Picture 1 (tube, helix red, strand yellow):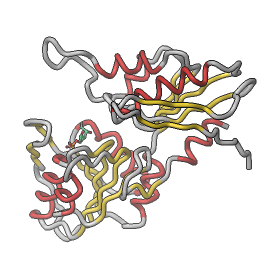
Picture 2 (cartoon, rainbow, N blue to C red; picture 1 turned 45 degrees about the horizontal axis):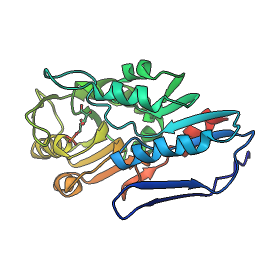
Picture 3 (cartoon, rainbow, N blue to C red; picture 1 turned 120 degrees about the vertical axis):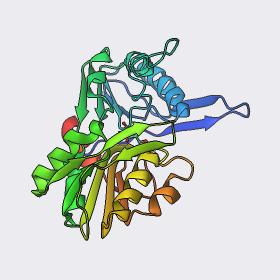
Picture 4 (tube, protein in one colour; picture 1 turned 30 degrees about the horizontal axis):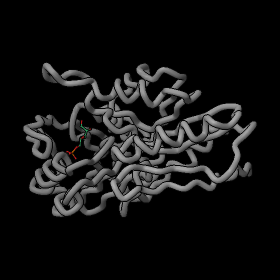
Length: 264
Ligand code: R5P
């Protein structure tokens, strides 16, 4: 096994909330890896300061690993006057790093907006292994955006898949049409790239439970679970899990191995 030492670093906040970082080791002549999400906002500040702190040394290279790329959903100007936030952060997070590795971008096209070579790791395979334990009868994508993911899972587990029709009303509310779906007495697996407010999954799963699903198992890559998302979801969902791109009480599937493989 290759062992890569971890750098002793200090990160704290001043009384006014400003961020302070310090590296307690020299990084001269090293290939350096920085792992930091661009979510929540406080992590973005840490990222920029850490990149600058790292760059004071004569390093060989700096690889930035962004397990969850925040702001990825604002990938166009939905309304006049808005920024394209995903582009803003893809460009700025590229500054002073040599390459970027990220996991399941909300829109895979965003990879082209980074200004340095960038690579996206897909976590579906490791999610599939976990889903397998529950032996689902049917795989559901809660919207068109996750259709390819559900299809991939259905091929791996050799089960049928169905894509639901989702209409977003506001940031916490969605409307979902199931069409002619038969889930009576079936174990249903729902896969999504992320769960934020839980609106999508709570709505989809309550409809599926009303249609007679015997068990609902939900897995996602990025578990943001903001506010009372988990409470909302757990009303109709039997099992919920995510990867640890954002560590939380449901992050039982680790992406560490996938990242390590890419690094090596
Ligand atoms: C949407 O396109 C995404 O794939 C997720 O379905 C969505 O972002 C989840 O958000 P929420 O949990 O707030 O419904």
